[in-house]
Image 1 (cartoon, helix red, strand yellow):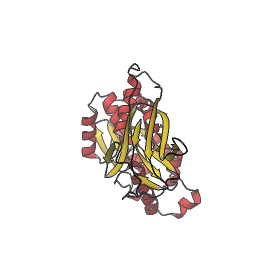
Image 2: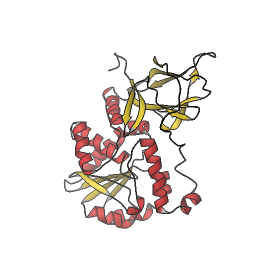
Image 3: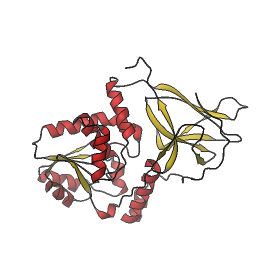
Image 4: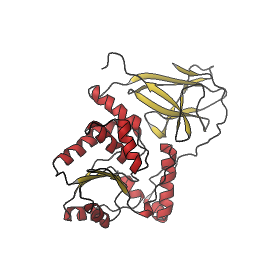
Length: 310
């Protein structure tokens, strides 16, 4: 049992309530490209705990991580396909969902047409944005697809892996490929990537996905209890863990007369960051393990696999 006997107080850093990123089409259409970029960047900062920004209006940007692997932001127009052809790209791996494209009013059809004209194979393997758990569950399939597509192409052709901003999902897929397929040390692969592209991939999720594979596929959740003492509080929630920063998990009182609020949840083995939301105020308990991630203080829990599971 992880238990915090903490007196609740207002944290010195309060995170604003997350707005729905994918708004109605008419609302999105009324915003200019700069405003859409600012909205996306604010969501990215909040949910990824990152100071990075994305400027969609500046056009597609990318970096070559390895001779056959380029990571970058989304294609916006057919001319972007021509730019990639000049980089000897033979494969475009798109990680965006439809709603990601809708946010910036992107039309994929002319991009697909131009890719076909230039003989570039375009494939989609959507991963939910700002969702570490979905990234973890998707990595094996996506990296496997990337490896197979590269294997059937000449050594002269490279792959372009992109999400929306090219700062989270795409770097994570590239790192997992370098780790699993190229047999690089994950930390060394990250260092090599970061030297050419400042980004914020979920290293913990890559390690967790590695564990999932070594454990033989689907791993049973481990029962985990997190508790915090919040005297006088009426509503206590948790954000983060395996549901992402946009979701909320409700804590319950251990008994009617107690000030201790508990969350009991089965989670896959791994290391998870989280934060309490006590009567609307975001709070990292100093009496539970903490970690500073890009300037944000979060609580962290390590979920260990049963000794006989591997």
